[in-house]
Image (cartoon, rainbow, N blue to C red):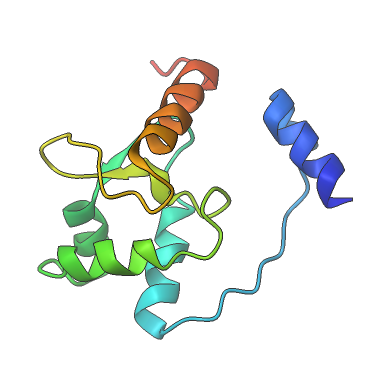
Length: 114
């Protein structure tokens, strides 16, 4: 079942994707943070400081970065969509080239927004 869902996702059949249930052990801060990552639209990016402000800890952008690094499900909980405020992409736990490739793939597949 999960393999079929993954194939639908990567083929671009997002309407056929059923809700995936995950168990993510973590602190209350981490869980709130990882939940906020799920709200970042496909094909877009945000910053560590915006995430920190969005979860009610505006000065905690470093803690956000550290907790994102502990994300146990890298693509399904899309930590790759978070970048530095300067626009620099680095320090991704799976490697900067992989993060760049994922962002580029999503940007190419994302629907055009008006």
